[in-house]
Image 1 (cartoon, rainbow, N blue to C red):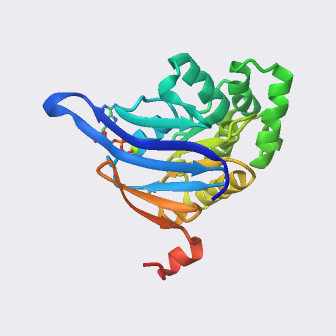
Image 2: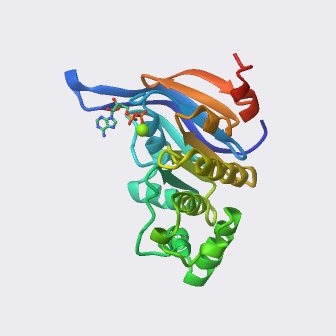
Length: 241
Ligand SMILES: Nc1ncnc2c1ncn2[C@@H]1O[C@H](COP(=O)(O)OP(=O)(O)O)[C@@H](O)[C@H]1O
Ligand SMILES: [Mg+2]
């Protein structure tokens, strides 16, 4: 694939705690995310999925291994520089929506830009562009409480890709939604990735994983299998091995 590499994990291991009670959450994980690519991560509870996302997003410094975000080696950066890089390059979408309740949809989306020093009007305009890509520009001035769960997740996707941000890290984003609403959210995520972004999607729903270009299976902190997602229909018809 000749597309830009957005994110690379190289030999990532993560231990929590020390000595006899230490838990190995990840062991030697390698993963590369390209522009235009959506990768689904599947695996049992405790297999290390959330740990992988927080390391990929620079929220957790791994015990060993290297994280490269848009060409920047995180190990060479200060905590402040990592925070700034995070604001400019990536966004998280969590199961529980995590929008700021006191801010409107457009204010939630423009927040990372304003934190990064953008002028308010320019930030608002970029936020409206991002909301348009998830078909929510008509709800820009609504507060999160006045939006449905699916709409809140679409706002979170817009926030993840606003301005120059191109990496979406989504941890069970459809976990609190009914399956029809979940499908809409994933269709929007897929479309946004196709338009120029990359995403890592943690899910335990195979139908949702089928929106991805490939599926990576984690077991006890190791990648045990990878498969190319060939689309919802093939997956559901059971013709895949
Ligand atoms: N902050 C933490 N401190 C100690 N152990 C943790 C912490 N976060 C996760 N773990 C442990 O690491 C392992 C992987 O957890 P996690 O990444 O949350 O898995 P998943 O998201 O697949 O359920 C689990 O055994 C979990 O209990
Ligand atoms: Mg998790």
